[in-house]
Picture 1: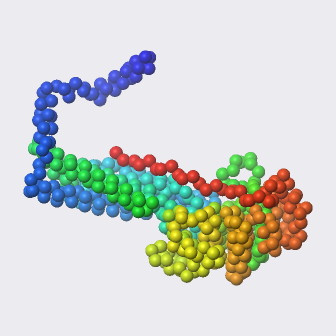
Picture 2: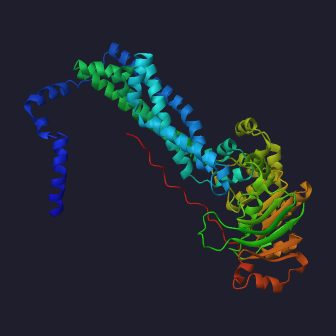
Length: 259
Length: 276
């Protein structure tokens, strides 16, 4: 009882600050337009012309996510190779040398900067640089996801069994050789499944990026929302669900192929 | 390859500051082309000795020289090149489970080939004949294209030894090559290993739990106990008396099978995936 009261005392000011007033949801004034918008959702708009448009925009979204992720890979792969401790030649016998340790520290810092700026902010920046359209989305996804992939790849590689990699390094192999002959086969399935999962995230986030003018399904959804066209929104949401389900299947299939 | 250890102390990097060193005041001279077996109860420092000789661990005191040079004074690049001329085969064969045997064996020659060549060889192995010959010496050539995780423990160990042959190293340091092999396989593996070392003129140092096998196959025997060298004798002069002294209180190990020094690591916990 005491704890319940204590929790209430602590939570109440927080709820006030957050302007949490759930009864507003049930207010007839806000209920009616919301219900009308939701009622529009069924049936989804399915005529040929609109479906063609959605298909084209879907393709553009997938292309944007894929291109962004490939660019992110180009950013993440070299940074990962530089930052993984287990690939350190000087760290083989105890302490890592000062120079390599400093490089590692700087690479990790760069990864933090890349991923701490949300892709939405990057997109707003790039919309001003390269103009409205998918190019801004691609660049935004590439930078943020490069930072995330670099960090998580590093963690996957460091938490895997380093025995094979260290043995190769001890026998005189180079860092990149040790990576391809020891570390990659040891961790390939985890890396692949994380990358596919990130691709799924990129597809979802490219929808959000569309709202700031980066093109694709998101931009289409934004304009439908503004016109309170629930039927179009629900069609596009269905397409999103299908896309996410498809990436799930692809991930499972790739894991099986590599497992 | 000539090796010399002069009053060397070796501590594990992770050891507590007050702990006794793994090797104490260790003196050793090894001439080119010698074949040496290191015996002693577990925890005696046999593996540590191999690690020091392989430049994988740095002595905390004393002198260590390879061909008259201290490897730890060399620039890093030179040291790594020198490591390419040594080969340390750990007790648990360091083979990634999803790799094909041919690739795992050919990984032994990585220090000798360029990066571009090694990447090409990942897709189209460029030394299948060599890998096959090395595997044939240990009678596992039928597994050439099998995946490592489809092999038994003994087959894996023999694949690890085949990799050592591909390295064409001038110094072979082999840790417990027989721990997963049955007696007839063990005899064949040791014969192949010593024959290969003799052909290439390489120095061969192995640790062994199988004392009779060590005495049969190696001309020079080092007895280690508690990080110190108990004896360094030709095999004929190692008698039952010395062995009993070496294995005092651990007589079961004199006959028994080799215990695994480093158990295979457990599968790492899956990485948490971060996403909003």
